[in-house]
Structure formats: structure tokens, C-alpha cells
Length: 583
Image (cartoon, rainbow, N blue to C red; front, top):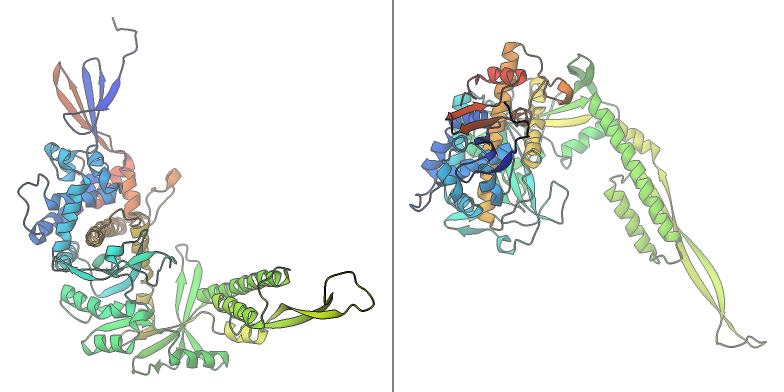
């Protein structure tokens, strides 16, 4: 007869193995996490990252129970799966099946932040550029990535703290240690120090193929020639299309690429004389436009129309200069101009209230004019808004001396000057400026591509911004809890590897959906369809996968895993990994 009393279940950390253990009536259930480890391991194996690390890292210390390569791969898996701090890696790894992390149960006790920190030291000592080149070349061959079009951009990684020891570049153990210092911060945090993170991705799936870390005060225009030389070694040729922002458009950079057989597409900076001359022609109404491309959304609703100016013109150096007009950009430009006008009106009202205050600090005309000019400059409305500074003088009389006034009392006149401001919007200038809405120029030395092909190539540039978004949101690259600059540089190399894995996962799944005719997957909350799945959605889909081991004194242990859902099986089938969870 069954005992009607409730069974008492206790849970504890098993000292003899990883995972959590639940015990009841002589039975024990040991549960270890699997999550998306089998999927990620397939990509890491195809990249042969373990082999690349062992081949490039310095000789191993015999006392190390966990190799440097194993520690770095564990860090990469952690960033992909959950992003725990370094001091929590050991506890995090103890919840997983150790073999899926490339470790044995005996190695779990040797995991701590010092072990991973020393592995980062060895990664810094290695030839990181050659290591990244090996891994990127392997990814290109293994996944058949097209290198005809490459996109380059940079972002900043900001840091809290002094980092006084890393204020200047210096050589450490034969390698250049970059400086964590102030520069042009792209997160709009000029109060924080930074490093510059330079990334290049392919036009085919935005797969990262090159990265570099530079000091925080490095300007973008100084990085392109070194980047292009690296990409030429990776591709084995010079005629790939190099796409970058306006920092590439210096005479020296463009001449370097052109004279070495390279092709490029970039944006002409607003500071160039060709820009001012063309916009003056547009304001005068002397430019003819020809439609070359209509863009629609997934439901075939028109969202943008692109036109080019005729006839074609050249830059001062003789490169192709193509002026485009976008209807969507024109709407955005008009909205931006309206917002700037609203902002300057609000700022001028605030200044007006300060001037009217009896305790105002604006007692001199020069100080008022300087405040007005600063507002116009910060709101970027110079030439659109005219501000007149008015002056009003009031007179007061006071006794020359103290005491009761009488017939012989003399009075002294005091004058007090107060300032006011009045502004007006120059409507004629705004009308002229509105004629330039939606206009932007591209520069290229490629004479074979059509204007439409150049436009579509440049329109792939936002894909690299999505990689930066992953770096700062999915992986939360900052804040960095490391004090040594060299370890931070090595950590950013690991971030490059995890970005590579995620991008390849996305690319493989999306290509498989296209081949199989699968329009979308229900990965969004409430089963809503997702047309372009991201790696993060796939990793989250397998978050609850576990391996369970049931042991009892009456028989051999029973091992089983969490049942896969229909959606999980479909994703695995698309990735060609139907057997990934047969463990």
C-alpha cells in the first residue's frame, strides 16, 4: 500500500559533480544545463577556434589544470550564453554539462577569475592580428562567405575609472598596449575615457572578418589604410569593394586605395568644396533628377524613391561623384529641421527668462551675445534664426549721503542696463535649405558599377551598426571589470570571436529558411512570426534545455534530456543539426 504521507524532497549542490541535485526516498535527480551549447559548439568546431588558439598562444605552463585555450573558449561560451562576470565563471560553469564546455568535472574546481585573467594575458602576448586572420579565413572557407564587398566602421568602448597607468600607449612584453583616454566618444559621453573598436564585416550576411583595437584618441581617418592592407591579405586580392563612412574620403586615403588597385565607396564630407557648390546649384533650382530605384517593404508598399542628379560630375581628384536624392531622407531632414527650430526656440526662451531675472548674471552685452551664439551653434541653426539683443536702461536716484533728507540734500543718479532678446526665423533661407532635403553624395573610383549598384552597396552599411548594437546590448561590452589595459584588449578579441559565431548562426539559419521556403518562425512573444531571426532569439529558444541523471540504489542510472518542442526541432532541422541534442 502506498504511503499517503508527502515525500520530502531536498535540493542541494552535488559535491561530486556539476549541476543541482534533488533527493527523495533514496533517489537523486542531478540536473545540468545544456541550453544552446550543442548548437554553438558546432560552429566553434567548424571554425576550429580551439586549434587556432593552441597554435597561436604561447607555451603552456605545466601547472595549469585548465589550458589557456580552454579558458578562453569557456569565456566565449559564457558571453554567448549568459555573460557572467569573470569572478562568476566557475559557479556558472558548475551548472552546465562540463563536456559541453570543453572541460572535465575535475577541471571545474580550477576555474576562477585569476585563471581566466592569465589566459587573457597569454592572448595579449600572442599575435592577435594573425590569430584573427586565421579564424576569419577559416570562416570564409568553411561557410563559403563572399568577400566581394566589405564594410568598415568603428565604435567606442567607454570606461568608468581613472586608468592612470593606461593613459599613454606603451610596449608591454613586446606588444603595443593601447591608451584608454579621452577622444571623440560615439556614445556621446565626453566625460568618459575610451578605446576605439574598429570592425569590418562582409556584405554577405554582415559576417565580421577583421577587428582592431586602437587608443581612445585615434581618429577614424588614420585607420583605413592599415585596415585595407589587412583585408587584402585576407582576401588575397585588392579589387574587393571597400565601403566606409566619410572619414575614408580624404585625398590620401582614396589615393592609397586607388593606386594599389582597390575599389571604394564612401560619402563626401560636408566640408568639401564640391558639396557647397552642388548645394548652391540645388538651391538655385538648376539640377535635374532621374529616378533609378524604388524601395518597398515586405508588403510591397512603397517607402522610398531614389534619384540621381544629371549630368554626372567628378571630385577634384577625378573620382566619380554621384548625387542622390531620397524621398524618405527628405522627410527625415524636414522633421529634423523642425525639431532643431523647436529646440532653439525653447533654449532662447530659457535665456530670455534668465535675462529678466532680478539676479541675472548677464550684465554685459558681450556675454549675452556669446550665450546666443552658443545656443545657435549647439542647435545647428546658424543662418536660419536671427537674434536681436535689445538694451533697456532704467534710472534711479539715491541720496548722496545717509540721513534724513532735507532742503540741501543732494541726489545721485544711477543707471541700470538690462538686456533682452528677440528672434525671428529666416523663412527664405529655410525655403532654400528645404530644397536640399534628401540629398547626399557618394564617391567611388569604380567606373563599372551603375549608380543603382553603388547605392545598394552603400545601403548595406547599417548592417555593421547592428553588429555594434549586439556588442553593446547582447554582450554588454561595457562596463569592463578589468583594471589592466592589456587584458581588456584581449577580452575585445574574444568579443570578436563571439560576434563571428552569432553572425554565422544568423546567416546559416536565414539562408536555410530561404532554401526551404520558410517565410518566418514564431520566435517573438505570443508566437508572433519573425522573418529574420537573430542569433539571440535562437539562443533564448533553447535556454531551458537540461540533461537529467536519475540514480537510485535499485538499478543503474537513467540519463535523459528535456524534450524538444516542435519549434526547436524545426530550427535544428533548418540548421542541419537534428542530432545535436542526442547526448
